[in-house]
Length: 214
Image 1 (spheres, rainbow, N blue to C red):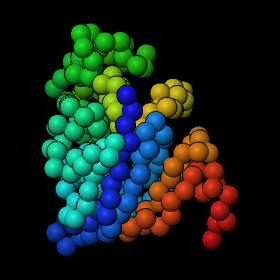
Image 2 (image 1 turned 180 degrees about the vertical axis):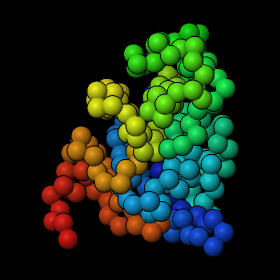
Image 3 (image 1 turned 90 degrees about the vertical axis):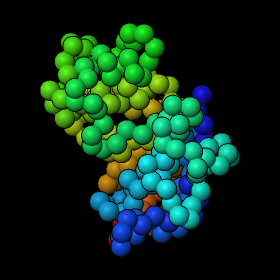
């Protein structure tokens, strides 16, 4: 079952680098959302904060209104269903494709994408970048997550696969990062535009498309 997730007043530093400076992000239940911005804008920092890999100070993470700021990352994923697919290092190189899928679903689950079926006995470390991305996404989808956090999920994927991924995401609570708003984003998707660790704009995808470009 999908859940709503929220980041409130998040400040995050890494040494002398300010990654987030008072950021509020909303992921309503069952709704697709996008975090848009250049590299270094804070997109990944938002996902890491929501997933528990980074601890904003100050800042609060809410899941369906419940404060989960102190819940560690492994419990957010396993017990609460807040699942992150990072942009890199999203698979275990020594495990086979079948072993990865078994981590996501009970028994011997059918992969969500047919492209993985011929690769079940292959070790993940021998796959191409696009195949590894597809495997990481498949494993996440098989957990039936309450919240899906995807950092640049379209990297390396073929157009036909992307179409099926988009269909899988509709109706879920999902936050995706991208440099610009994808053409396929539904008009009602919630968009946060980030610049230098701050929210520069927030609204629906349809509104963003109608805005005049500078």
